[in-house]
Figure (spheres, rainbow, N blue to C red):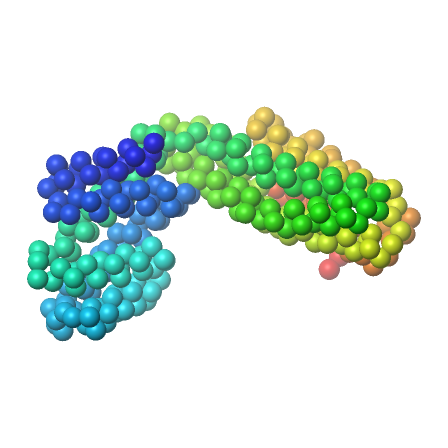
Length: 338
């Protein structure tokens, strides 16, 4: 709906209001901003417009200087993209710089497209932002609920499976859980991307600003999500190794893994309820208590490595819940660890 409305409005403004000679470019940019820049629409618009301006300026003057032709057009495109790179432009800026320079080369004998294309980029970008944050803004809380729920459920589910496999010494179950967790990286990336989109809407949209405080908590938690995923991945790997090497498995070790997964799921629920995540912290500290008991009973190489990664994951989870790094490390038992 956002893309369709933005495309229609951009075309209307470019064609009927401004009389742009190339009105098609405005809706094309609007669609690109809506669909391809979730969480970074303002930046994306800036890159698109900057790329068009660079391509138009470089293309206009180089074509006047050296003329047109296959080899010369290639040179113009290469130089326009090089200028965009020189000014640290992203992929969108480079693409627009190159394509604008190319169009100017192809239409050198026709009307000058530099101004219409630049105008279209600006219209399309501004309309896209207006639609996304003023006319049809997403509900940021619904966005993070839909994105965060599957990611946290997947994390907790596979940790539970790994803990159960460790308790039963079921190597195949542990390997299957490890494989599923390894292939879940796109879900984790999607969750962080959607939280960024929700934050952008909450900041820019006056209709959604009351959700900003809650979304900022999610944003803070999302900053630790990648580290939690990495530690979880290593935990899975050492779980498989512990079973394969027939190392001792004290009862507290599988329980600690399962409780970490439960704590991660509780964090999402606590945030949605708008409450202080004390249940999350209590469950995470329960995982540390059980890991300490397992260490006291005796672990070997893989088991100790597993506990180290569990402590790191708990520390990141506690920081995601709002605790300072030093306090989180201390409660996770990382204070004196390398």
